[in-house]
Length: 395
Image: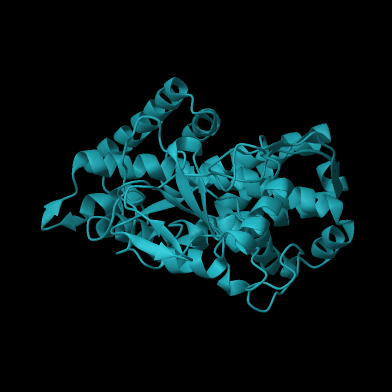
């Protein structure tokens, strides 16, 4: 089959978005032979409908392009309902509003601590520094891990995701095993000393039942292993993209600094504009035809959320940042349907805290490059060097 596009041709976000804009207009169900061959949906309506149709677009065959080079399957990402449901229910239980309110104070403290090296030096990489270390603390607090786990998770997850993008199977395996060790030790601790199921993901998973039986040990550990890394992939890219945008738009930067009440709305528009995912995938459970193209079972179909969120049919003037965009609640930055981001409320809060604390601690910051970019399955900046001017209290 002839290729409609080549996702390996460029990793530059602006060039990639121009490519997806062309595909949205000319070839909304596009095919590429890269990574073993896959289709890409780029229009908002098609991506939304596919994500909301789990009986037709299933996750249990291929959930990411490129796939884990070892072919492992972990819940809930790689499971379909009903097998998916108890894992998702257990994690959702620990992310209710009362739990998030309890997490905000320690997370704000961690954000300030993680910003200190950048503020003291006056420069640093917001994506590979703060953007990695603060999310590690977010995950550590959510999972109730020991404090010394956070720096280990930051290092391990960074090496893991870098190796994944390069399809370096040996490093992926080595770093993944480190995270499996963390997950196994966590399960063992919670078996000995359970916590409140609404406050602790491991305890919540241990309390779940599937057909009246406890969740299989392999999948329970796999779910926690997935939880260790899921919040470590997108935040560095999002924070890097957001900070570069604010650097390029100093008026917006100063406006948000002067009126922090605007930050939650700004974060939502940033998530739409800089959605970092283009490789989340499904396969079809039976042959379908979409826009005149036949899609057979077994071939991955990527839901290009980054392209869908810039579809002008849904978001007028889609490449422009628009504070309080009227239909911002429609964006697909966290996915849609049964497999929407399980940590969505926690991610929103963490991004808000990160921006609030950075703006409060500085009088200005400037992204200075050179910038590095993510490969599939993400899109965006993975390295964003910045120069900051700290407030007097942080000098």
